[in-house]
Amino acid sequence: MKDLKIHNFLSRYKNLWSVIILWSIVLTSSIILLVGAFFTYKNTKIAAENSLKMQAMGIAITVQSFLQSLELEEIKVLDYALFSEIILNEKWEGVAFISLYDEKGNIILHSNPELIGKKIELKKHPYYPYYYYLILGTLEKVFVTDFKINFPQGNYYILRVALHTYPAELMIGKAKIFVLINITASIGLIIFGILGTFLVRKIERMQIKFKELESISLMTKILAHEIRNPLGSIKGFSQYLMGRVDEKFKDPLKIIFNETLRIERLTDELLFYTNPVKINLTEFFLSELLEEILISFKNTYPEIDFKFNLNNEIKVKSDRDKLKEIIINLLQNAIDAVLEANKEKRIVSLNVEKRENKIKFEIIDNGIGMDKETLEKATEPFFTTKPKGSGLGLAIVNKLCEALSIKLKIESKKGDGTRVCLIIPELP
Image (cartoon, rainbow, N blue to C red; front, side, top):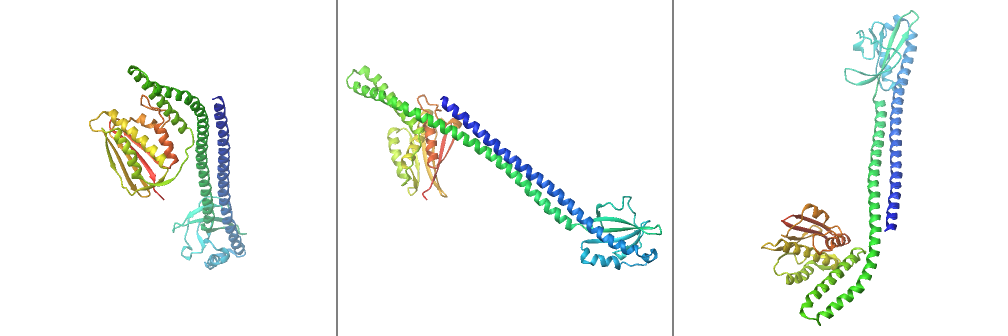
């Protein structure tokens, strides 16, 4: 027992470190992904803005050089052809509009000739620094830059260059997709960490359970060996004495004999429960197996009405002996529940039907049923509500069902009986 406790402690310690390492990797990777995504987005946004600035500045320098070579009066007689040519030039692709204003806000030149001569209200902001996204009449967002052009005469004009933002928005959109991918990856890593933690915990429980079963198996084998020798002698002597003593001593000897049988059966159940299940798969008709089982029960319990509903053509591929043991255990439980209920009609029904590639087998009784708490513990080893029960019947059934890939489902209500359902894989 001390060795088992030490093993359990070491298993938990080892698994705890596994969880810590797992979450260290998950959190570090998530932080790297998120920080990388943040800086990628930020740098892409800056790069897109700088690209627009450089394009606007190139156009402004070209136009400014040309305008400063002219006299003020010559500028006033220019038409919009100059700006239109810039917009149509492939070199300046992406230009939304170009305009020239005097210090009072009058439009001297504009790439749209319909706006020349109109007056706008100039906002009070530094001319050279950039500001973003002026909404036009078309509701299109543009990147707007103002440049102040000084002339020797002391006059100045304002050159406004507006660029389409969709090239920059395309770059930023790709960066957003990258950020979204990284966020999704981070969430995926966290989910992986959670699932990994559950998996480590499950492995830990399985390791502890396996070690406990291994220890119980060893103790059971030793105990069974030590019990069977004196038990065999007690059973043999009780049988021998029953034929040679007075009638008044026979009943006590019968009790001794029956109790030795009960202990012997309990020992066998313990050995079976604590050892691996060996499976021997064969093909057989389910109806033949059930009829074989029911013959014995009908003769033993004539007061119970057994109802049988089954298609004789249903075949299964399973371990015949193990499946027989499952059904016998479940039937015995149903019979005990019906007898304990002491109702006028004692009914145990067996229903079998084929559903897709599965076989649904039900055992239904109108016995005493189980409350919610009892139902939850029904398949736990050594839990029983019977005075002389071992508490291993349903635990063994559950173990056999797992070995045979049979799904076990129990529904019960106190006073209304119990329904046990077995979902058995059909013959492939």
